[in-house]
Length: 169
Length: 331
Picture 1 (cartoon, rainbow over the protein chains, first blue to last red):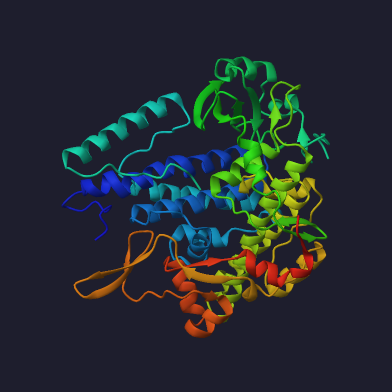
Picture 2 (picture 1 turned 30 degrees about the vertical axis):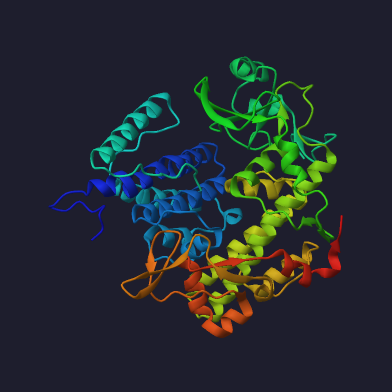
């Protein structure tokens, strides 16, 4: 069973405070940043950068999914590239379907953005909490409060402190 | 090159006022914001804006180098007119120390530019080296973080990173074809290899800016064509066109037991525990050139072992020395 799945029995707190949180914080580090870049490029009608940002978002979504499944540890470039090339995860399939950015225009960019929006929504629905936007002062404070709660829950259960990834993609 | 000018040290530089205008700020406003953090140090704009890139939503990344700072601190987030300003502190000696690592190392001196052997940069080091290469002082009188010789070393080190990725991805693409993997998988890997070739060409041309999304913009402003690569023959042709030597992808790569993995035993049964803390019962622990490992395991199993973190696919300096021996210059 996937511990991140909400079943009649509920979410596993150990999963929430370890792998679930790891995925959520990676979402803040990598997916949010890519979404911001995507929107900024769209506003500036820089369609090539927009498609590149879509690719970044999809890669980040796949990384979050792997973290949610407990696949943490150091990120090896060739290993991750192989996963991106072969994974049957919908976000990886969408990544492989993206056009070559230098041959892309508005239509390709908007198609890519729609795919990102779909896979982003699916990922957010599986994360254990709503991830605040950590590039804002309010978001930073919210993230600190969530983090403190997660640490407290782990200590109450005599679990060792979790080592959530600090670096993005 | 719009917005670019040659500087005495870095091959490419951008004026601080032009860079900050992208986000609607002036050097004076940013200098005032970061002044309490600077002390006796020097503040530099780094990242995409310093590389002449960015857009209205870009962050302002500031690195402060200071004699009194003993180790890296930060980032500390501030905001100016709603724009995030990230400030990090480094010892004043840090940029030179990073560049020094490439001093005295052999170079692959290709017609397109130099690739340094003998120095491997980690992820954060790559990012810092690239940022310091294009750093622009908030104070126009601030000296560049790298002189011309240091810039050349850093450029060659960063070119080595990209050359390794290019070779690794080419190898995986070639293996994927051998293994009969889906066409979409093979094409994706060839395209990623082609992307790394484009990145390498940018770096060899003096633009080492990090940030995947900017690659098409960087290529465009350097006048580099960027058609998608769809197979080995095209990659080879593109290499030659870029004044780089062609190579057989399978001869450059090797596999070895993955970092962070170990053999363990449980109730008399042997397992491999990989860097993701997964127990694998049927893992392989081969250490060999890819061509040899492929004969032993088959292309499909070899790729699977890389994907399961049983084996790491690596491009060793020793192999590059052997394959590209005639291009080596000992410095």
